[in-house]
Image (tube, rainbow, N blue to C red; front, side, top):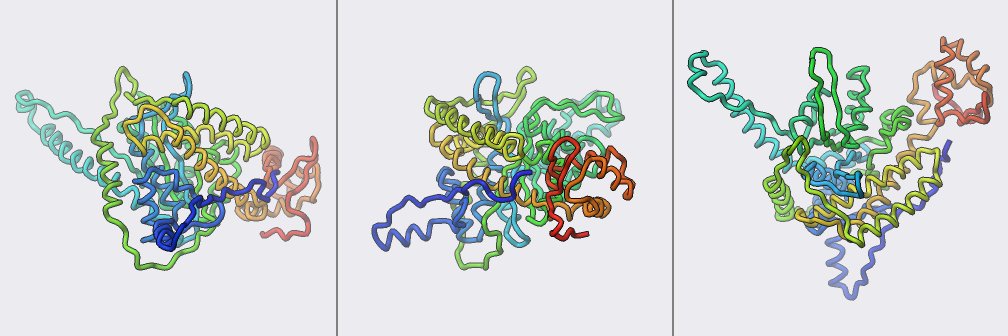
Length: 475
């Protein structure tokens, strides 16, 4: 089992600005965000339009920089969708979809930043919904005509609802929306714990496996009884954004979600402080938000995602010479980090940042210039800082999840009692014998022993518990 202590130094951003006089100091204070000392979200890498907005919302509405910044990245991933992708090298292309999760206590202002940032996209969804309702009413009216009258009229085209943001849906509805909206969709969940519970409880099917495929933008076939023709989604594009409280991290990401790679695909925003802030008398700059709205509206209106020969007409960006060299150098260093933590969750997390880096660089470049053809040096330098921030947050979340005491408390009562009954060091045979008291079959005991948070394998057939005998195990 990995140590529960942090083995990395969190990113600490330097201001890098010399103040020459009092007026400069005041100007800087008024325009700098309120941030924590350690592992600050690198808001300076955002293009000015977005940076100014995030800082303004922080100053006026106490929106934490980490939350609003992550919401902006996910919103832009929603807006750009499949309209653009980055050619990393031959046969390796990346879209910019993001699975994001913001972590904080109740009252830490998690929901409002996400809703504020996604409001312009929801407004576009509302317009699309009204248009769809009108066209559907027109088609329904035609469909009710007598057969003779239908022959003398042209059948209206049956409308398709284009919806980008999903908040309350079944898996079937999600698949349908992804199939109908070629640009892609985003799941927005106030409480991710509820979303995860729904994912686990809806059916015995492999819902997690579907979400893994969506993250990779892999073509997906959905087979259902009653549908003779399976639903085939050629280019699924899905992003996720939502909030979690630290106290539910262990139950939200059990060992199964660590082992199957679901956890490793998330970008976590986990500020040093998640306390609620008192209201202030600062007013937000309406023009900054208007500029943000216009960016979104202009991009949607200027790009039309369609299929040509069963392929989406995505614009393809490439590296310029400097950005390619920078990425290759960064990736080499990331390989060293992965190898340093080989055979561990940390290594798996770091490995996924090859993809995260590319997606973040694409987002930053498009946020700077939506008409870009090349990824520039500034974008990859920004992606590097964002990756360091998000990786630190992932490691912080992992430490919480892999705390044996907290994790054990989330298990069923009979598993906790079984664990307490085991000696600190034991053999597989002894564990199987103890399991009989709790009606655990041999297979179930052996499967439980694979849990690396609670058990350490000494050698073949020999184990020890990670919680010492002196620690009181809560039942």
